Image 1: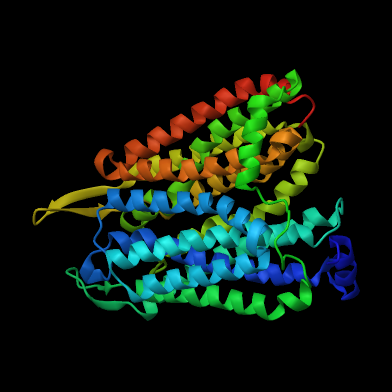
Image 2 (image 1 turned 45 degrees about the horizontal axis):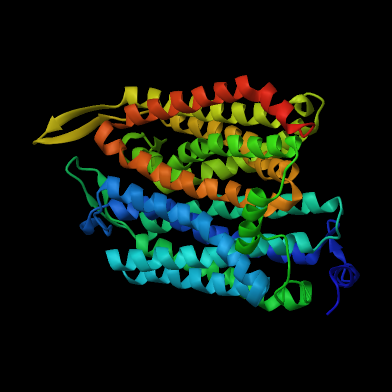
Length: 479
């Protein structure tokens, strides 16, 4: 078998697109369609679970639905550690991507065909398993397209990341249109206005399944040509493996770390503890904020009512627009002066500011009792929601791009896999925590939850800011 440099030489002989291997764009479109599938499903999942049976929903109470959503999104971030290990040890990255894609396809089909609690369980389980095979291995293949130390590698990942956001941007728009327009049943409501009587959620899941299938057709048709043998057989890669995490844990116990290494490891654990709360708040976008948008935000603009699902496209749209600006700023003389703890503290504060705008939105909502039912008579302005997403996106850009990078810089080589696993598992914990938070919205009220999240993460942000000099000193030159 040829070594990786020989393969890259052969790939370079095929020519490049914008200076990058053609295989990068194959992976770009494969990931785009997978993210289309995932974010399309995610945009309607909470709505599908909580709408009434007569509306083609599952009539699950909001608290239980929030917990289901939290555990689902949490395990989506847990299984890639296992999937990466299986690929590296037994089946190779390309086979793992195919297995994962097909499994997720059938997961979406289950949601489409079985409109029941059993169908929901089967569908979400298949999606969790499939994502575990797919997600870590396609990212690994991107890295293997470049020689070690190639400066184009970072820009290659940036292009790949755009595929994620393009898929996340268009999916809610397509799925929302299918569910609320093309396949929705409409009638005349009590107020004499046209309203949706039942939603076409199953066709949203079908669209997600078709997106997943398209990605797999593209990948399996062209992988042999544009990836050659890369990822075809199992072998050691930069995927975090379970065996390495266990070995690293043993190293932590049995080997002696220098004072500098101990302090750097401590910084990773401290930052991880803070970031759990950031993601727990940020992930409210798919749960509590989606339900709040559906019921209490005035989505009518110029006589047109914007579908609730469409707002799941706001964050990726802001990412696409703002990411180049942030990339430039971090490399400027001003951005270069900001340490990682300062960036992360700023991200948490911005997340909290975003929730303060949601708190202002709750102050605009008015309701009254009509025929024994609590009816919303005035909804909150749309601008509050958009501003919230704007601040949340800026917060994300202060945290997400620098997180993985700082772990790789701080972690001692002998503990690199364990500490990367710890960082990845923090998102798993955060999503489950986020589900529990969203579950209490119905009991405590949206205003209470938004206020609590806002002041808690702002407080944590200022704590991290106060600790930033100490943390920077413990990082020993790592910025």
